[in-house]
Length: 282
Image 1 (cartoon, rainbow, N blue to C red):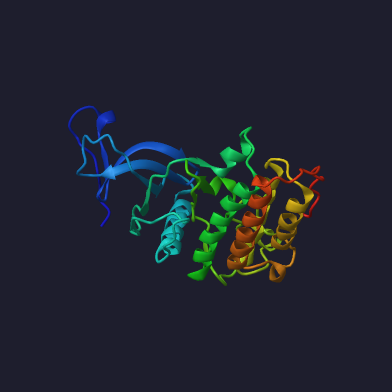
Image 2 (cartoon, rainbow, N blue to C red):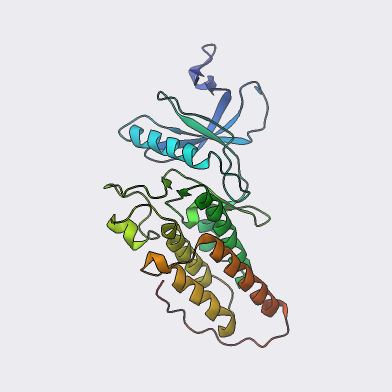
C-alpha cells in the first residue's frame, strides 16, 4: 500500500517525504500532470546517494491525466526487459497516489545532443538510432507501442548507451484511437494525428524515421554513396502508408548493416565526395 508521511519534527521545509518505501529528494522535472523526483530507500536517511527517480501525478486540473500516464507506463513496462528500455524497479497502482520508480540515468537527451554544436560521424548516429529501434522491438514484442518517440525521450549515456524513456503515452496494440491526441505532432504519424487507426507499431516506426532524419542532418559530411542507403531507409520508415513501413526488427537489421558499411568508409582511405542536399520526404 502506498504510504505518504512527513517528519513533523523541526522546520516544515526539512520534512522528508516518504512514498511507499522511498524517500523523495529534489524535483528534477515537472510537467502539467506529472513530476519526477530523485529518490532513495526510506531507510537510507543521511546517505548522499540518490540513485533512483520517482514519477508521480501532481495535484491540479491535470491530475487525472497524470494518473493515467503513470498507470499506462506501469502496464507497458511490466514484463518488458531490455537494456535500451527504461527499467521499472517498483510501482504502486493505488488510486490515491500511483507512482513508479526507475533507475537514475546518467547522460543527456538526444535532443540536447542534436542541439549541440558537435556533429557526430554517420555510423555513430546509426548506432544510436539502432538502440532505440531495439527498445521498440522489445516493446512491440510484448504488445505495446511507445506512442511518443522523439529525441527528448531517448537518454544518451556518457559511453553511448541509449535508453528509451517515458511511456506515459504508451498504448496496447490494436487499441481504438482516442479522440484526445497524445504525443508530439512533429514526430507523430499521419494516421496518429488523424485519429483514424488503432494503435500499431508502424506509428512508432514513423516517429523513429523522423528522428533518424534529424540525425542525418546533424552528422559530419559524408559521401553520397554512404548517405543514399540511409536516406532510402528513412523514406521507408516515414511512408504515408503504415503497411509500407518496416517492422522494428527489420529496422534494427538494416541499421546494423549500414553501421558496418559506413564505418568501413569512415575509417578507410576513401576520397570524400561532396554531400548532396538531403531532400527526402521526411
